[in-house]
Length: 102
Image (cartoon, rainbow, N blue to C red; front, side, top):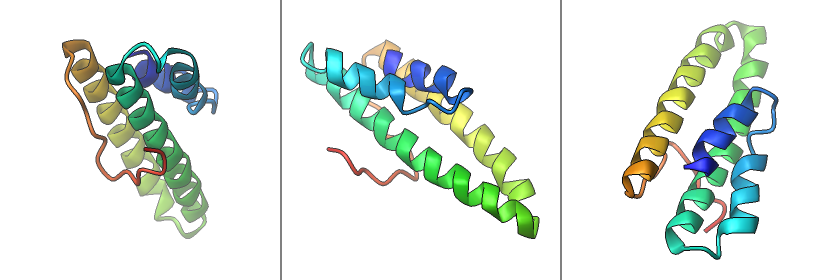
C-alpha cells in the first residue's frame, strides 16, 4: 500500500516514481506481494509521467485542456483502487499501463 499511496503523495511534487522505487529497492525481499505491488505501481508511475507530458503538450492545441484533468481524475481513482486492494491483501493491475518492469 505504501508504494501506491506514496506515489500519489509524491506526485504532487513530481516525484511519483520515488515512492514505489524505494519500496521495490528496500522492501521487495520481504514478500512477493510487496514486490508485485511495488513493480505495478512503478510501471503505472512511468506511464503516468508519459501521459502527463503528452497531455501537457497537447494543451497547445487545446485538447490537452480536456485530457489533462480527465487523466488526473483517472490517476486518482486508480491509485485509490490499488491502495484499497493492497490493504485487502489482493493483487491489482493498473489499466492502460505498459509494463516495462516485470
